[in-house]
Length: 135
Image 1 (tube, rainbow, N blue to C red):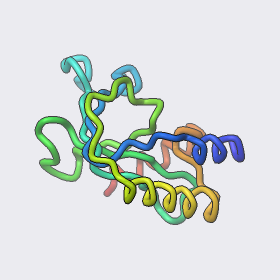
Image 2: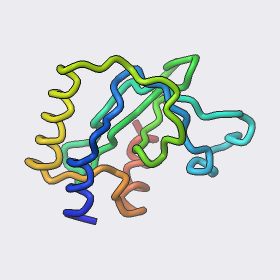
Image 3: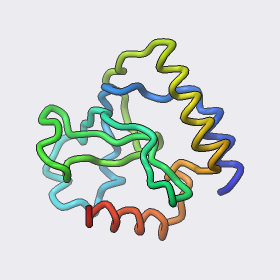
Image 4: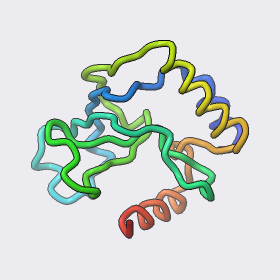
């Protein structure tokens, strides 16, 4: 996807703040065991701009299941904006938030040339998933 993905990521006006509560699209997690047993895949955004230094992509968001939170390391789920079906509640937002998002996009997208995992190839996503499962 290259430059198109980078331009979209820089121009994306809204970056959800920490503490935002979102419903993810269950269809995107169809291979997850027992996913059909839950009514909604509701997450609290607890992390942003995640990725390894050597990767060419990053995840804009990672969250923990609402209402239980993080009971262990396996409960963190990485996701991108297109996987969000509904924003239930936005977290706290101020000028420091705007500055932080601007600086992170400047560093990751402009200076390091990274794209959101929303623009990654399937094999890149699979490689990341294997790394996360090992950790």
